[in-house]
Image 1 (spheres, rainbow, N blue to C red):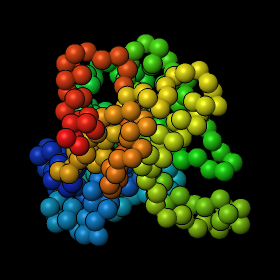
Image 2 (image 1 turned 30 degrees about the vertical axis):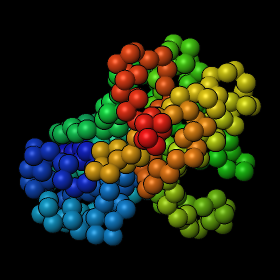
Image 3 (image 1 turned 180 degrees about the horizontal axis):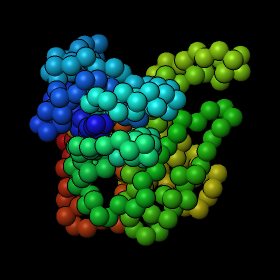
Length: 277
C-alpha cells in the first residue's frame, strides 16, 4: 500500500488523526521537502519533532529523489506499507499526481488522506473562494530569464472581476547553472520569494506588457506563514505592501478582483490603515 498523506500548513501537529494512524502503520515514511514548506523546514529540530510525534524515522525526499527515483519508492510499496507525506494537501502539486498515476499503472494500491492547503485556507483573508480565477505561480527572475506567462492569466482574471492567488517561488536544493555547465551538481542556498519581490516583478511585467491588468494602486492581500500560529495578513495597494515587513516565509499574494460588501468588511480588518491604527 502507498499512502499519500497531507500534513496541513502549520507544524507536525496539523496531521489528521486518520493520517497519523496511517503513518504509524507504515514500514517506511518519506516527507517531500520542495513543493512547499512546513514550519519544520525552518527549525533545526523540526524533523526530530515529527519523528517523535509520529513514532517513525522519516526520510526527507527532495525533488531529485522524487522525480528521478520514484520507482524505488514504488517498489518498496509493492511488498510493504509506505507513506509519502506532503505539505498541505496531496494534490496541491502535479508531482504528486504523477506519483499516483505511476503507482496505479503498476497495480499498486494507493490511499490518499487529505488535509488543508493554501487553496482553501486562503479564505482566511476574507475573499470568497468561488470568486477566484486561475491560480498563478511567480518564479524568481534572473538576469537572462524574466518569464511573463502568468501575466495573461492575471489579465483574464481581472477582466472577469475575479481574484488571483499568486504562489511565490520556492527554490530548495536547486543546482546552480554554473555547476550544471561544469557537469557537477552544486546546489544553491534555499530561497523563498517574499511579497515585495513578487510585487516588483509583477509591476515590471505590467510595464513591459502595458495592458493595464493592474498597477501600483491595485488592491492586494499579502499573506505570510498561512496556517501558522503567527500568520500575517495585510491588505493594501501593491505600492503600500512594498513597505510591509512580512517576516519569515512562506509568502503568497492575492490580487483582488471585484468585491462583495462582505468581502470588503473582512478586508477592512486586515487593511494597513486598520493595522497601523
